[in-house]
Image (cartoon, rainbow, N blue to C red; front, side, top):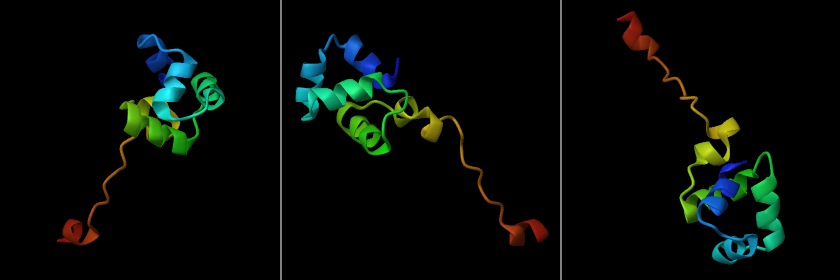
Amino acid sequence: MNALEKYRIDRCLTYDELALELSKSKASVWRHCLADAIPGDAAMEYNKRLGIPLESLRPDIYGDKQPEQKKDTKDAAA
């Protein structure tokens, strides 16, 4: 179960109700709720409109990986 489907179930919403809340078609919401991976643009919208963390919507892209900070080679040599 993906994060969008969990959101829908936790709030006892039908696909129609969630689609209405998002101004999307029921078919799009249904596809996204049952998808293994939600499209990136849709994940951004669900994050903004519903507050679902991107890490939950697309863990493959926004998972726990923290970008490494580049070390300044000038400071390291000094």
